[in-house]
Image (cartoon, rainbow, N blue to C red; front, side, top):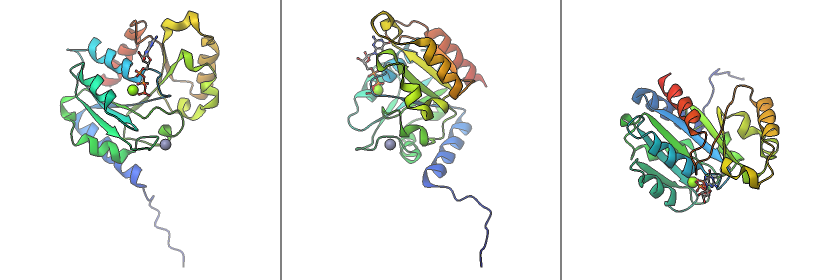
Length: 215
Ligand SMILES: Nc1nc2c(ncn2[C@@H]2O[C@H](COP(=O)(O)OP(=O)(O)OP(=O)(O)O)[C@@H](O)[C@H]2O)c(=O)[nH]1
Ligand SMILES: [Mg+2]
Ligand SMILES: [Zn+2]
């Protein structure tokens, strides 16, 4: 006899993601999952965002790396709270790891919590962490073919930050081609051209963040 329970059985990751999402909702904290290749500038972008929005938006960061707490230490230099997750080899963060890290983060006192995922354009996008929004960072030196080669990550992102715009004159990167292609993957994605080094274009990103936070 076949019995249909008509109830979706949640995976461990989905269960923890639900739990995290409920906590963020109860604390009115906007959680943003930040995904990119290694070295695109995630930590630099977050540090600049924290410094520029000091006194306006209370920001905390959960850092995901395979090894070391280098990035969490960089974030703490800004004065913002940061918790490091060392995945010991895993190439993406799981919702369960985030649940554990939340034990050391006073989310009730934060307006925005960024989760910097492990540098990887492939599997982080397959794991819901309980976030309300996803940001993908693509930097000019990586090449303009990345959205074509790794479509899943771009299709699931709410925001694309095209970083290292200060290097525009030095690299071959067809901006129009990238923007056009990314819009075929996700037509409503918000796209900002920025430089975490010079601050170029960051105001538009901050406006998006404040608007999302207000919703
Ligand atoms: N020229 C230029 N360099 C940048 C910019 N943003 C970041 N960088 C540099 O890029 C390198 C990597 O930056 P990170 O912020 O560590 O990159 P990440 O994405 O956090 O790297 P992982 O955490 O290792 O994945 C550093 O040397 C930064 O100084 C930028 O806008 N312009
Ligand atoms: Mg980093
Ligand atoms: Zn992985």
